[in-house]
Image (cartoon, one colour):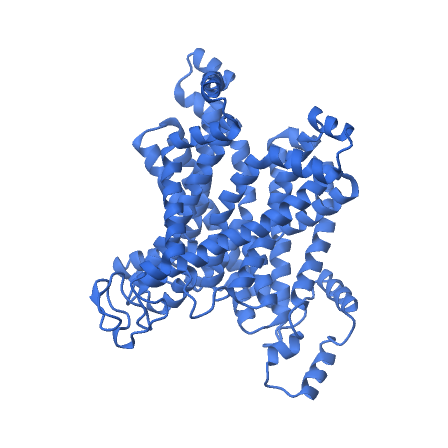
Amino acid sequence: MLQFIARRLLAAIPVLIGVSLITFILMNVVPGDPISAMMEKRADEATIQKLRHAYGLDRPLYLQYLSFVGHAARGDLGRSFRTDQPVTEALAQHFPATVKLALSSMIVGMLLGLAVGIISAVKQYSVFDHGSMVLALSFISAPIFWVAILLQILFGLYWKVLPISGYSGWTYMVLPAFVLGSRYAASIARLTRSSLLETVRQDYIRTARAKGLTERVVIFKHALKNAMIPVITVIGLQIGGLLTGAILTESVFAIPGLGRLAISAINHRDFPLIQGTVLFTAVVYVLANIIVDISYAYLDPRIRLQ
Amino acid sequence: MSTESTAAPEVKANRDESGGSLWTDAWRRLKKNKPAMVGLFFIILLVFVALTADFIAPAGPYTQDLGARLSKPGAHRAIGGGGLYLLGSDQLGRDILSRIIHGSRVSLAVGLVSEFIVSFLGISLGAIAGYYGGKADAWIMRLSDIMFAFPDLLFAIGIMFALGPNIFNVFIALGVVGWAGMARLVRSQILSLKEMEFIESARAQGISDFRIIVRHLLPNCLGPIIVSITLGIPGAILGEAGLSFLGLGAQPPMASWGSMIYDARPYFSTFPYFSIFPGVAIMIVVFAFNLFGDGLRDALDPRLKN
């Protein structure tokens, strides 16, 4: 197991280097250069040159990249062009809200998704099964920001039971967590259902039934454990979707998370801040995936050997 | 396993009747799948609406009627020969229904063009990686690992920032974001096919690598590729909607469903129709592609069906 963890961590190093390189390239293919893009036409040529020199943007690109990576590795992502706040400080301020949103959505999604998926599989072709599967596909098909707006209208304006937007207390988290969680729940429900249906057709389940075990024991003690393996993989794979959804959800509900930070940085063409946010989010995503892989290997010993 | 034993003779019987190929068999199975046919109907409808938008839209997508801003659905139109605002009018007095009809072009184009880019990059890189193995494989797979390290929307946002917001860059961004998944799919298919006898025989006949890949290997993995494209289109449509909703996609005055919801944001409490209808359009289209894609997957690989 330790060996597996070590291997997984080592494999992440080239990925992280690649991520930093691609982030850097993305930010530097912008027509013109960061300073003139940010200043647009508000500064004269001499000022732009002075600023370029101050931010080290007059050096060759590979040197800029090396210094970017070197500083990033020591936890220094530069300072915001606009506010002069260190980028890491801005990230530290905005990260907790995104984590809170992602985790609460994950919990909503898993509880809802597993419950619906199991009931649907056990009662295959029932009204509940058909209804919930149509609903699940609807949630997967609807743009998440639109679902968010609908629920704002419904719960916030029409029934007036929940706050529409903002971030000051747990009631503000209910709608966003449900919006983001429902989409997550939808894919988990669909997968739990199909995986469980596949598992209950296997011989060992037939044996369990032949022994005269109750349906409850057959499903929960025997079938569910094996049916969970693909579900757990997908729970991991969906972390990217969760981060993506968080960007859009934060934007609708005015939650001060990484998504909002990235969008406002883009609107102000604040290069260091965008670069830092993209890099940081990608690193978080890589680490989250490693954690998922490790827990996956823990649950399914076959994985460790591959 | 019981499904297979019951499904197999049926398939064989069909084949005897017509001497049909994989594709006619698949089409026969697909025709029996009602949800997939419903999906196909809406896809055809989307194509029809997109092609005939100029003729069927009651008003021009950019025709403003500043005297009738934010009119309710069913209100009378004063200009352009009268008639009704069936779905209301937007903040500039433009007919929402007409803008939705014209927006279908954007969604269809985004789906098709970005999936074309995805397929072009993904199939060529995946085929090279799978067929040649070795260093080419290692580099392409590391690159795809790096791509997977970015949450999709975040990467697309980065590209949109670098290239500047307009609809053509949305095509590119969504195409570049998606290739890695396709490359992995094609690679794994080719890895399992290339050891088979018919490829060995082709090689023994001295057929060029390019010809073996294009004429012998790729046609045999067309099924999964087509399914992946069909299920990728709704992803691209949602991606465009998300980018446009963040203000990074289609720019005014272009009518795109995502940008319409973006335009509607300030009015969501006072004039909810404006945000609701474009979202319904997105949901129906994405839902249709998902239904059809799921059906196609079942039809092309009956073993997966439960």
